[in-house]
Amino acid sequence: MVRVRLHLSLREALGEYVELGISGCIKAYELLEELRRLLNSATDTGSLVVVRNGVGLGKNDVVCKDDVVDVLPSISGG
Image (cartoon, rainbow, N blue to C red; front, side, top):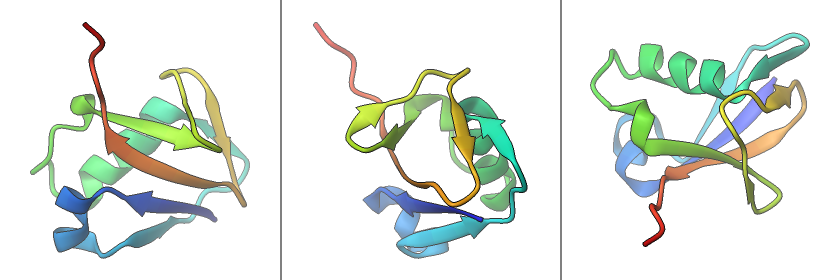
């Protein structure tokens, strides 16, 4: 299971944490797609980033079972 801590705007719908039944590993963008399915497509997951140990993951970075990650809004630099 991957344990995902959600940022505040998603907590209202799903609570602070969700656990995704993932065996093996998936890419970060696939994890966001799974969250979109849980939210019934109500949230634009393109504006979110998966963070592990304080580091934002790229869309092709891998998240594996037993990982704990945060899902936070993406911040554009300027």
